[in-house]
Image (tube, rainbow, N blue to C red; front, side):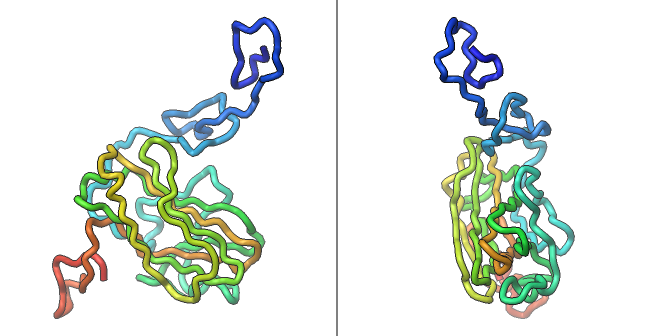
Length: 231
């Protein structure tokens, strides 16, 4: 019978003790499905896309974040960096491609989440959409890196990796063909720091492409392959 409860029943004449004050919904007022009554964000925030990503998109973060955005509802932001991260025994010493990369600064920042989002992707623009990226997860207390997809029904994890993977950049290739029929999808790169400062994970050269074709992508090279989309 409490009007402040999420499950308030105006027809009830006696309180049965079932009042629930934990209301799930979108807490960000900038989204079209903002719920002013919600008390807990359920990751459902969505807005109508004004334009869609419909062609191959490569991002090395050398000029800001490109079309990626920081999540305002997480614990901290991904940091754009050149050179080493500044902590010994963790993080890359340089970018994989170009001069910059993104990483999670874990010093004094333990067990927290940083979300980077790429929104309004039209998966039907490719016969076989793929997300390819380079990651660096070096450190004794390395946390977890997740890739999640939201097709309008909430976030679903499609790739995850935890723990120390060595002091090396590694490539991950994700087939997103399961979402080809969706009108649009959002992609989220989620970094969760570990229990100490040796949890500086990094990403670089994130690519939205069709079926991966390996070869030389430099048009000035003698072995240039015009069909290649991954070096």
